[in-house]
Image 1: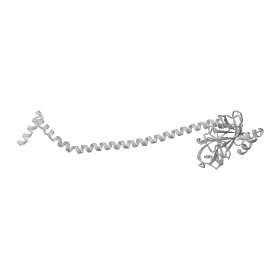
Image 2: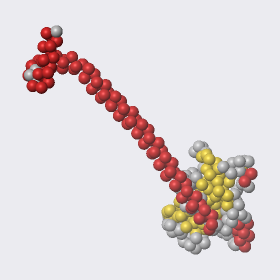
Image 3: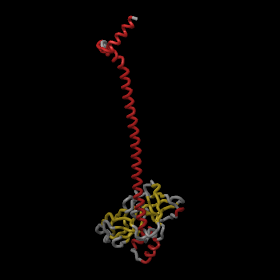
Length: 283
C-alpha cells in the first residue's frame, strides 16, 4: 500500500509539476539509438516496397500509354487513308460528272506480278455489265481497258503494258498517232511521228476514237520529250500518262457506246498509211 500511495503521489506531482519530465527525456535520448536500429529494417522495407510499387506502377502506366499511343497512331493513319480515299472518290465523282456517258466505279483488288505485263484486277465483273475492251479511267485520264472478264472480277490491261496500243491525237493541232506501252509505268512511245511533225514537249494527247475501243476526247498522256535526228524520217517521241497507273485504287468503267461515233468519224477521215496499220493493230 505504501508503494501504491507513493506511486499515486508521484503521478500526481508529475501531472501538475512535471517533475519526471527531465528523467523521461534523458531516458528517451539514451534509448533512441536502440529504437532507431530496431525500427530501421521495417522503415527500409516500407520505403523499398513503396518505391518498387511506384516504379512498377509507372512502368505499367508507361506501357499502357505506349499501347494507347500506338492505337491512336493507327487510328490517325486510318483516318488519313480514309480522308485520301474520300478525296479520290470526290475526284472520281467530279470526273464522272464531266463525262457524257454513264460509268461504273470499281476498286483495285490485285496487281499482276508478272514483270512482262501490266495487268490489275478489279472487283467488278460480268454481273455488273463489264465487258472485254471496256475503257477504264481514273480521275485524271485513261488508264487502260478491260482484258478478261469473270462473273465477279475482271483484269485490266494498263496503258503501260508492252502489248497495249491506243490511237491518240495531239489536242493542240489534231495530229494523229498511236501511243504504245513500253513496260515502264510512266513512259509511252509514239509510233511513226514524222521528224518534221508539229509536236512539242507538254502537248496533251487525247484519245482519237479511231481504234474503236476508246471514246474520243479522253486525256491519255502528255508529251515528255521529242528527239528528231537529222536524216531520220521519224522522231523519237515519248509521253507520260496523265492517269496514275500505279497509284489509283478507284477506277471508272465507261459503259456508253461513244466509241462507235469515233469509228464513224474514222471512216470519213483520210488517215495516213503509216498510222493506219498501227491503229488497226490497236483495235
